[in-house]
Amino acid sequence: MNQLAELKNINKKYGKKKVLHDVSLTIKEKQVIAILGENGSGKSTFLRIAAGIERPDSGQVLYAPKNLRTGYVPERFPKYLRFTPDEYLHYIGKINGISEIILKQRIPLLLRRFQLDKWSNRRINELSKGNIQKVGIIQAILQQPELLILDEPLSGLDLSAQQELLSIISELKEQKTTILLTYHESSMFEGIVDQTYYIKDGCLAEEMITEKQDMKLIEIKGLIDIDVEEWKEILYSEKREDKLLLYVSSDDSNQILTRVLTAGGSIESVNSTDFNN
Ligand SMILES: Nc1ncnc2c1ncn2[C@@H]1O[C@H](COP(=O)(O)OP(=O)(O)OP(=O)(O)O)[C@@H](O)[C@H]1O
Image (cartoon, rainbow, N blue to C red; front, top):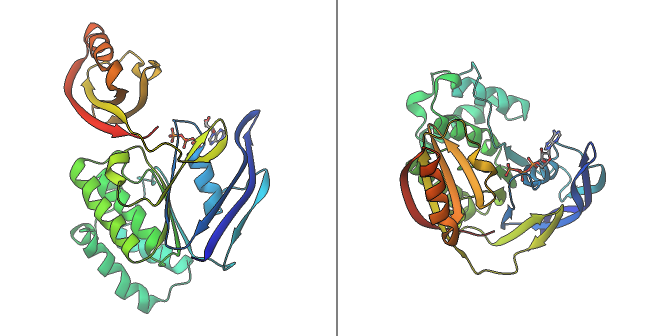
């Protein structure tokens, strides 16, 4: 397998906060690599540096070939764009030097593949979160990137949009696109990811333990004034519309359920899940 990119001895600080400490990673072609870690551990920073969008304080990002085509989808794709998906994708395509003839073929095909064709003349700011996320992915794959970087691509989407996006990501893998991504919905990516790394205390380590924690996913509503996310037992939390999704170890779930009820919240559902941490 040929080497596609290499991040060498990357260091990054924000103010006094050291986020990445001497991090190195080799990305080989046709691999799907996951970068996992707790909230705030530096995953997005690492992905932005790998995409060439952010500069490290020291260290090198080397691509082979030098003009490697990279596509990057941020965790939050801008939702206030007043373009239609069609206009926006033409604009991005032109910036990337793709000819009008190719864009006229490729954009309608991608819009159809992502089931966005019926929305292609609506403005992006009028679309649902899932459809905006799909526009974000199309802009990244429009130039057929050799390296696709996805920052929490499923975050904030409902289950059917998540499954649809997952099948598109699997398809890209089958087409031999190299993918670097981060996510929290680990069980959904089983079978897609080839290698997993964790960022902890600024350092990157390859997955050592494949043992999964027995986890519960708790959906709650109605705890507006309490900062539940500060509860130390919560491994990961996510706001989704009016609900809050909490991932906790099964051992802690009863304690968390009691605390939610005591604080006046309502429990919408409790499900078993897995989550590599
Ligand atoms: N532009 C920035 N300016 C200042 N601090 C930043 C900036 N970007 C990130 N940080 C800080 O760097 C740390 C790492 O942030 P980053 O977004 O990379 O983490 P993450 O692992 O992606 O988190 P999450 O899982 O919550 O998305 C955090 O403490 C964050 O507040």
